[in-house]
Length: 535
Image 1 (cartoon, rainbow, N blue to C red):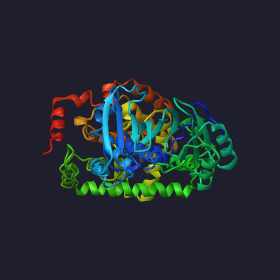
Image 2 (tube, rainbow, N blue to C red):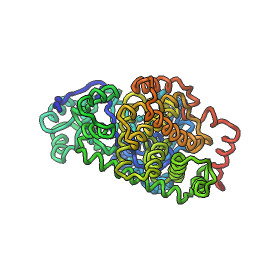
Image 3 (tube, rainbow, N blue to C red):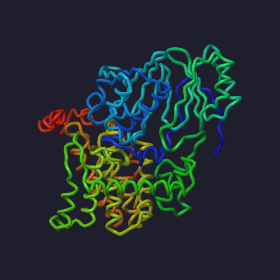
Image 4 (tube, helix red, strand yellow):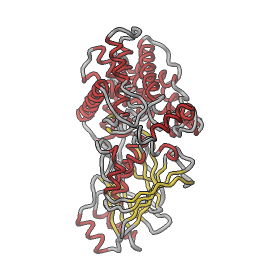
């Protein structure tokens, strides 16, 4: 890899978007109804906590009245996740459902306001944090699947995704001298001198925090006001000069022209370069995720309980009827439906799941992949290969479209999961690379324009049906590709079109609960019932 020099920045610039399979596509491991609400909010809260050195007394949380969080922040887990992050918890912490009470017991006062904050993104968080000695502001956005970006700190424009050790230095008048000193004395990926409404801010992105000697020297030699250490929240770090072998399907096919690799092997090549991981590390990390998914599915089939949800234990009913041969002969498809339902029930009961690619769409891909593999009697190793293949398709979507329903409707969530699952199923069947890609293309074509309209503001209905549809569509398209059907439209063009179509879906049908099934009479009645303390 080419070593690029450190640089000083006075305006907002970002490195190219190189998604990681384990950051952006298949992950995080979490609890809660929605990754773009709960897991993302928790990541934002963790960063806000670090900004305050874990000493928070008051928090003002502002959501834009025109954004999706104005109507969904409570019911879809944004408040829960944010509170957990402010307490320093991780996304799979079993205490998350009681984070509001824990925050109160910690003596942290919270105020939530819905107003016009002129947000540029539908999932924007504006925080003002205080204690007896300092106050800081932070603006962040949820970009889908648990991914976030901090876009402003104390009036300075930043770009923090939680994939570096970040050090924020609040200088006096000698900010340029400090930058020069840092260039000469530390090994960092980026050093940025940022302007803004107030004094300047120095942002250091690195593979670790500044050591105590450097911090002491900054305070002794320069008029440094304070130094803040912001820990990463993502499992795969970024680094200076990162390069990936390809970022589109066309580039991948060209890269593979003289290698004859399968899609799952190409995924390993990609993630190894992106995350600075060995091929073995990539495979083993995905195998661990597959085992966790299997565990969640078994827990769902066994039965789950949780008061604040619409649906009961439906996977048990399905399993009983399937065992008694009381269903239409579905074979592999019925196994998939059982597993999809079980995974969705675990999610809705605050159990541990993997966002794949999101929590709202956490069941289509694993339900299809693990369900098919179970029907075929295949091993965890084969499931892992299939999940890696799915992850590669997801990288292309993350790089060139979105997983956020707030931005692209449910085609971005369940739709993306269906395209990923189609490639996974072809991999289980030992299909070719081109067949895997064609299956993904056809599956994504079939879900174009799918809206997001959760009933009663919960991520259950019609989300369960859409996850089942995602798996069913994936199976059909995998078989079509294996039979040699012509996908017609290349995968890259389908993904580009998804992005355009998603942005054209009306605001009311992009996870705002302002349209579609969300505003039916029954939906509103269920929502009121779930608000009752005696529910």
